[in-house]
Length: 89
Image (tube, rainbow, N blue to C red; front, side, top):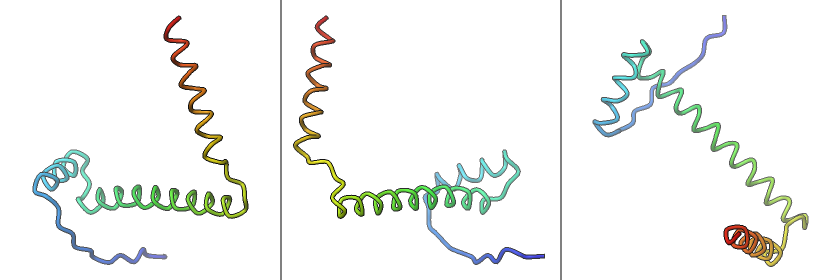
């Protein structure tokens, strides 16, 4: 059987968060550590996703696949004008 190797990590958090975490652990019949690991997994997954997309976007810019800022500003101005026209109707 392949056991998951874990290591202890110590953090400091506010007493209010500890109370909320304890309440959550009690209601769900899970440990504090389980909930903290779930939250950390979600955070790390989101950060990794963002970094992948940032890296991809920078690669696209370096390859000349960007959109000039003036074009974006023109589109935003056009949308703004459309919204103003629609709200007057």
